[in-house]
Amino acid sequence: MNRFPDKTVIITGSSSGIGAATARRFAAEGANVVLNSRNAKDCESVAADLDPARTLIVAGDVSKPEFAREIVNKTVERFGALDVLVNNAGVAAGGMLAKASDDDIDRVIDINVKGVLYMCRAAIPELAKTEGCIVNTSSVSGLGGDWSLPIYNASKGAVTNLTRALALQLGRKKIRVNAVNPSLTRTDMTDGIADNAALFEAFKIRMPLPPPAEPDDIAGPILFLASDDARMVNGVNLPVDGGIGASNGQPNFLAYS
Ligand SMILES: NC(=O)c1ccc[n+]([C@@H]2O[C@H](COP(=O)([O-])OP(=O)(O)OC[C@H]3O[C@@H](n4cnc5c(N)ncnc54)[C@H](O)[C@@H]3O)[C@@H](O)[C@H]2O)c1
Image (cartoon, rainbow, N blue to C red; front, side, top):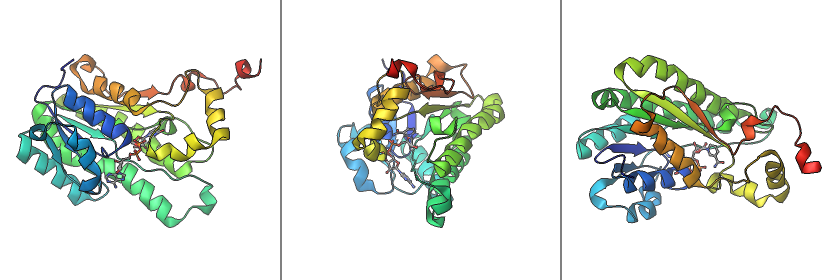
């Protein structure tokens, strides 16, 4: 497939995991790709596999409003337009809220929530020119609660609802706004879970399709939402969760039969 010839895509947090897989797939389908993480060096291994003429690294912290303006400006300077913004950069913090540090709360909310707001705000004028779209990497943690991720749940819940609100606000400008909501995916962020046999076993019991997802399993739905195939899809939070959300919360009797 070649759904994005000469389209320009910013993918925040694309030095690893879901963002890196998404960048590779956009590039393979003809897009100009803007890579981002806090350090340029972290993006170099992803960039090394891509066409330098269609690749730009803009390093910086998405939680800073001035950086959001910088990455959008540099993208338009280099490629002439912006067609797709993938808000993928994110961090997690686990544990009991009563024991959370101020820094945990600030870091997760600043990056996961304010970062998405700043990036959308900076990108909207350019996306209006191209009738482009936004795809947010939210999470199943933005659709319901987890047992031990309250700050992360608060942050991804905000992304889920921002997706709906911006879809309403921007539809008449023909800017579509959607999100993917992955469950457990094998990336740097989930290293600890995949290594924790008991926790991983609990996921295996709850998820109908065998976990974990791989980054490419999330990149595919991101590209679908960004493509013309999804021309009338707007305001959707698409679970990419192996069916975990199909449960009504009962224990998995099949696992014990
Ligand atoms: N892995 C999972 O199970 C899972 C599940 C649901 C949602 N997600 C979401 O997917 C997204 C990607 O995470 P991942 O799992 O690929 O993990 P990852 O750690 O591999 O990727 C996170 C990326 O965000 C970048 N980043 C972090 N803070 C940043 C900042 N302030 N500015 C710019 N870049 C920053 C990192 O450099 C990295 O490129 C995140 O938003 C995460 O919340 C992951």
